[in-house]
Length: 234
Ligand code: C5P
Image 1 (cartoon, rainbow, N blue to C red):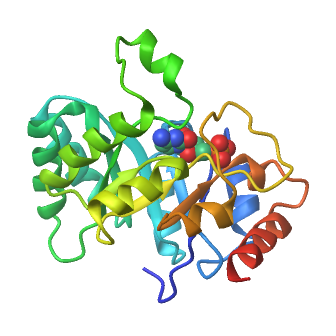
Image 2 (cartoon, rainbow, N blue to C red; image 1 turned 180 degrees about the horizontal axis):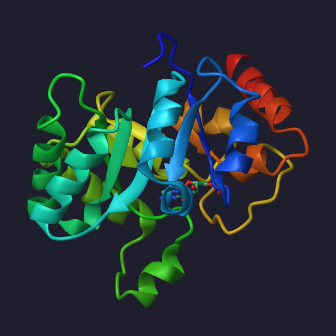
């Protein structure tokens, strides 16, 4: 883990590690943390993740585990053994699964990663919930899942910045709130529905911002990252 604690986690949603490495070579652990998701992990595997940790980056391994408790416990343990900074599971797996995930990170010992729960994907909005037969508004639904995750001993949540304020009011300062769906002023929302700007997200209580395409698809990704970091220090 690096000594300073950048707020931006860049989502390395690249098709292969060559493209990811081009970006990594032009940044540093002082400027951002890195998130490896399903696409890159499936192509490049645990060795690649461990190589990012060796370069000094805090790595969020975003594999969103959602399975029976025993499988999730062992998967979280295996993820933690890579030396990553953060891992996650789906809150929808329920209390037994969340508690098993917590046991899995604790098996790592004192240098265990943070364990957070995905509440509701930021690509989902109220109509998407209704299609699943869930009549609650996103805010109420996220708060319900947050309560479950916190009761099960998790360190925090993945949520949209739009829910961060309500979650802080309800659960206080302790939970880590990691917010994707971040779009600097004037950038495309892509497939994200519940979005916020970087400075809005921090003002509303986000702990860390997950940012993918606004950085990785920018013609000059390093410049995009510097400019977002600068917008946060104003
Ligand atoms: O490119 P963009 O900034 O939209 O990337 C957001 C990243 O955050 C993606 O890697 C996506 O998988 C992840 N994510 C998300 N919503 C969640 C959890 C993770 O968008 N609820």
